[in-house]
Structure formats: structure tokens, C-alpha cells
Length: 533
Image 1: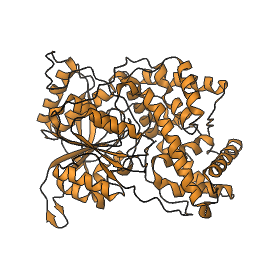
Image 2: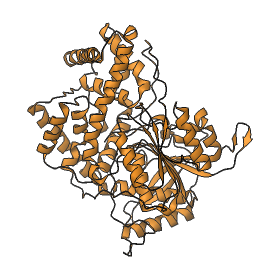
Image 3: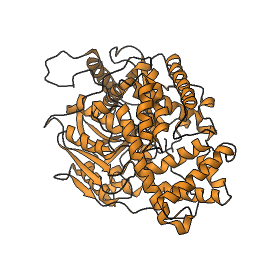
Image 4: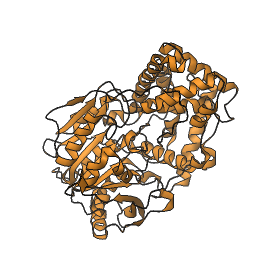
């Protein structure tokens, strides 16, 4: 399930959680599983070893002010002294000054941007932004690449040169021939994942949560302060379920619905429905600014303009590489982040006036990013497929997505094709974790959510709030940007600062008015914030 952590830079997709072991410190009376014992062994070893910080590898693309190191974790926690893999970790130390005043250091703030398949190594750079300066004064900002991502034992399921294919079609109501073609592709992709990655079954949400505890120990922290966005909220919640006594503070920004019945097949269906609503929000905004874009004075007229462009691209791809599939992918980002709205609308408008260059700039695949994109998708697929059972009969997928596409055509089938390899997955499946904590097991935790978020629909935040005793939900009303902490909403940021800096949460659920809508502009070459999916 695709999802992203908007305001932190990169974004990712949603993923599953699986729980087989009793939570650490539980009073169940059952003996600890081998994995539970293995995670304790790995954390103790990492705590003794620490992290040797040095210059970051050139491949990380980070400035010299950021230091990097590695943390060793077991590939298989049932065998903690067996094969080890190394996770790349990045850090900037707390500045200890904010507004000219000395600030006490509070330890490390560890961040995950989601995915599965996204790296958080860039996170220490946010400390230079005004919204983050107070937090950067109090905390070492720590990011890392989870297992499988980047240089952290990277996964690959196919040759990256063949991953980015363009131009492609994107039928919202595919015929039987197209479906057979995509089923064959999904089967081939699943086979490629299995054949190219011998340890594939160990890339899961459960092991991501265990890895997080090893990172905590390597940083020398007795308790974890964690900020997870999108999928990061899900394995953060799994961490809280497994290691409640290790939690200091946790922020869940744009929460995945952790209900085991929704992981992950049901969550993806709900996501497709939510994207239809957000796609309508975008079209309503464009219609409101018809004097700038001339794409239609109603959302329906804007949709006709979009379909006209898609049909023309099907006949003649722009620049030879932008077809309907690339158009849909580019406009899907507008469902995640409304700061894309002006440039996307301007590019569509320019194309209809005879200038395809802005659309090509925004939608054409970037060959230089093929390896990173393929790696990200491989991790996404592995984690989601490993985490839970999926329907194995395409007839079920066909029935559910055909029905949904009648009312939510924009993303439904594209989402289904992305996840279809899970129907043909050969690695053993886990059962989703029953995420929940009893009263008093956790310190207060903070959940941030936008009411119209499409990537992680708002119902997920309410469900997480219900399952984590002592958690408090802060809602940005009538807004849909994915990932809201550290963004343009001062009210949201005040709650984030109060929690991370002082441990304060609202007495009960709190609400913030929506951030200001983007301003229309005819500019079409504005720089985009780099994000995935």
C-alpha cells in the first residue's frame, strides 16, 4: 500500500505487521520465542559496540555536517549469532541552542519516513529548517536505511534497466487481455524476488521493529524517542506492542490502519477509495482557478481535460516517454501533496496549448534513478507480501477491483497491479500483529493525521488511537496532505514541539484548522521536493 511521509523529504508506502512473539516484558507466562531472545541478544551486543561515526558514503548524497555509521543486526532473529546485515545510520548532534538560549540535550530522535522501501538517512538535514530548529536543539537527529534499503543489505527483484518502462498504458477499466498480461508480469516479478534474494522471508515489519530496538541500543539510549510517518507509524506501533517498556516518546504521523483484518489487502482497497476523494479535491481546486489554468470551470470539466490529455498521450507519447501511465503516476503525487497542485495544473494546461515540455519534465521517468526506484519497490513488495496472507486467486482481485473501479477509477487498478505479486509469493507468510497496548504500558504517545489524507485514510488514525492506550490524536481538519508534522500548519507544529520537547499532549483529541491552500501559478518548472511513490 503506497504511502509517504511528506514533510520530511522522501515518502514511501504502507506495509504489514506480523507478530508471533509475546511482547517483551509481558506477563503471559509463556517462554520467550527464539526471535524474542535473539532481539535481546542483538540489542545487548549493539549497545556494547555502539556506532563508529565517520564520513558518509558518497552514495548517500549527504552534506559533510552529517555523520554516518552502521549497526549490525541478525538477518534471522531466531539465530542472532548467524548471518549479520549492516544498516546505514546517519546523525547530526543536537545544537543545544535555540533562539540564542541554551537548551538541554534530550537524546536521540530516530525517524522513519515510511514505505516500506524508503530511506530516512536524509532526516538530519531537516534541522536546518525553521520548523525543526527547536527540536534540533534538543535532540540528535537520527535517520537510517531499514533492512533491504539503499546500502542496508539491498534487495533487488529485477534488472533496474527493465524496471522503468515508458511509455505505458493505464486503463482504468482493463480488458481481459490486459489483465492476463499483468498477471504474467506479477508472477514473473514474484519469481525474480525469490530467486535473487535467498533471505527474502526475513524482510518484514516484525524484523523492522526488532531492528529499531537494536538501533536504539547502539545509540546508547535506554528508551526510544521515535517519529514515524506513514508506514513508519505501523512498525512503530508494532515496536510499541513488542517493546512497550523501551518507549520514551513516539509520534505517529499519518497513521496506517493497524487492524489485522486490514493488513494489507483491505488497506489498499480503502486507499484507492480515498485517492478518488482526494483526486476530486484537486480537480475542484483547479476549477476554482480556471482563470489561471483554463482547464474547466467545474471538476467534471477538469476531468475531461485530463482524459483528453491521456487519450492524446496514448496515441503519441510526449517526448517519446510520457504515456498515460506516466501521466497517472505524476498526478497521483498531487493526491499525496497539495504543494504539487499548481505545477501539475500548469503542465496540463500548457500541454493543451501545444507546449508538452512542462509535462515531460514532471512526468518522464529518470533513468539515473532506476536502481533506487527498483530497490524501493523490491523492499515494498517483500515486506507487504511477507507480512500477511493475500488472496491467491486472481478472481478475487478481479472481482474486488472491478467493483471498486466503478466508483473509484483513478488509482484502483494501478494500486492492484503494484501489489499483485503478493498473490504469487513463495516465501512463508506471517500473521499480522494485533497492535495494542494496555492502560499504563506506554507513556503518552502522539498521533497526527490530516482528515482527507488519501495515502493513509483518517480511519486508520482513529483505529490506532483506540488500540494504543494513552495515545492522543491531533487532527488537521479539511486537509489531505500526507505527513503533516513540521509542515505549514503552525497549530500542528505546536503540538509536535510541545510533545517532543516537554512531553505534553492535549488532554483529549485536538483539532487544527487546515493549512492554507496552495496559490495558483502559471509557473510550470518549479522544483519538486524529491519524494517516492
